[in-house]
Amino acid sequence: MAITRASPACGNCRTRRIKCNLLRPRCSQCARAGLDCTGYRSQSDLLFRDQTKMTIRKLHAPSTRVTTPNKYAACWSPVAMKPTFNVEELAQKVFSDNFAILGDGCKHWMDSNTGRQSTATISLTSVGLAALAVVHKDPDMMDLARRKYNFAIKILNKAIIGHQVSGIEQSIAGSFILSIFEMITCDNHSSSHTWQNHVHGAAAFLGYLCSTNGLPASPVKEIIEICYTTTLACLISGKTVPFFLLELPGRFGVSSNTPQDDEDPLLSAMRLFAIMGTLVNIRGLENQGLFPASQLAILAIQNDQALQRWATSLPASWTYHKIPERGQYIYQDVWYARIWNYYRLARILANRIISDNFDIMSSAMSPGGDFKSQYDQSYAIVSFLLQEIYFSLPFMFNAEQMPPTSLPLSAALFFTITLLQSLLEITDRAALIQDWSSPVCEVLGERFTFTKGIVMQNLR
Image (cartoon, rainbow, N blue to C red; front, side):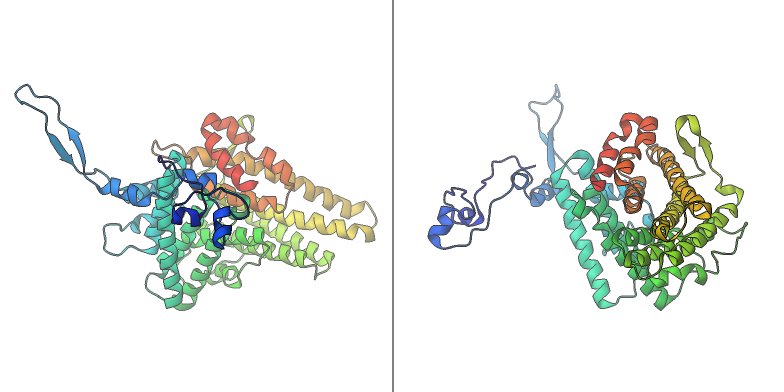
């Protein structure tokens, strides 16, 4: 925050160093000189001016301290002290402790000591700086974060324009990580969806990687997380899921219709993604109005049945425990909790498609019978699964707030915002905003107040 007093005058008057009377739409000085008035600075501009150079100068300038008095010394002497920390290394540690959504790979990208930083390293540094700035309400730190963010964007653009195969995996990760930056720094609803641009970019990079270098030997969490987050972004923005993402499970040798009790959990997650992506595309067809309601309802019912088969085919390691009296579910780890919530979201989407199209068909059908039964069942499933999602959130936030160095900005925050934004598109908005946080607030209490505020900021 700026300490010295700033002038609210228009840009022309500040440049000419003359008094401005602040008239609108053009001040008298600009009118007399025949100039286009550049407008006036807002209150936030006056408070939060660019002081990056001053911050960097203070950070790297040697500080001095006074020695303790010595009875054998005639006077005190100043002793030069060098800074004991590097702000970028601190930011990277913050990211590692709180935002490691892409798994352990992030730790290998923290190559700040090398001569040339990667896109992933620059991106995660910007996120760590932004997290510190938000928590400590430090506008100077936020300005540093934004500069690092802009630098990461430039590096990504070079990778795209230059078709650089070298380091393309880190470009994918960097693009995905920048979506986290957009999430935690947004200050209004219109900018809260900007994270989708980065996620779509990460998906495009992934498609390029698969077409040129082929797939890795087995699915990894980084790829799976990008697939799911891209699907949520498509649901929110009304786009279709890219075909190359939908075909990834088949290329990994898994099928959404073939239960595999002893398969790797990552392969199970890929099977679920294939169904979820298909449902998002069915929702897109529904919005276009080009297919009959009966056909869309049948497709949704078939995919809902496939989701139920997926859940019943899972091994015992996927089991979670319910604590009804506390309104909380306990999972093996946070990753399993996320995948279960993707499953619930997919089933909510399927049953919403069913009920919406049954509404359209109702005028041509007689009341009662199978129609009424299916409609009531879909309505009840949506309500039940929403509660299950809410009951899973306390575990996710509590698990990530356990370390003493943890911030109330984490992977759980990013996941929750993207999930709730998706649910806003297919459920009752007012009810969701009112109900989602009750279980978390009951379990975490005051610890959750700050994080809840950030989530609500993204749901307005």
